[in-house]
Figure 1 (cartoon, rainbow, N blue to C red):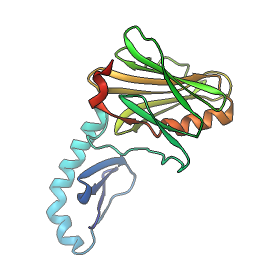
Figure 2 (figure 1 turned 90 degrees about the horizontal axis):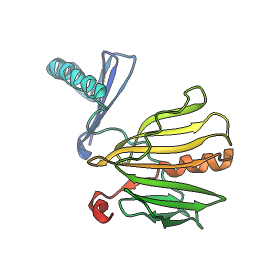
Figure 3 (figure 1 turned 180 degrees about the horizontal axis):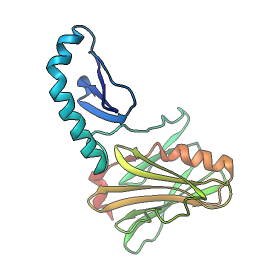
Figure 4 (figure 1 turned 90 degrees about the vertical axis):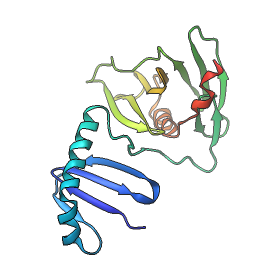
Length: 206
């Protein structure tokens, strides 16, 4: 089926009718591109495009459109999926997941390739929002269709490389992080973060 792309007033609205998904990002052009009968459809859609733009702008101020673009990295065919209950992550062969003893949250550790990623799933997971901005790269993004914050030190080997995913089920969020990774380890961890998937039905296991 055809895609409809509308760029208006600095906002890019993209619709995928066959997938029932709509997402939006900011753009700099003003262009309406609709295959066939562009002029007629433009006149008819004008008011709705404007209304949609205003709705999307309001959605961004509250945390993004309801159907946001996912920044997912497709794992290598050789990678394995590690099931941690409420969530899972893909990792190279040899990686293992082990549940640890938690007090008020579900905690564990993913280990492989010479380092460990520590997970904390619950109501009090570290938001990773108190790091010195001059020393870290911060990516506010979406993973598994949920809002996420990915941080990494500008200087490899010094600091936290981690991801925080908020409000997975109610107030339950996820922090997954490691300290002082080499540049190679940091690159691998950032790739792994993008493979996270979530299973709310198993949120009640802890």
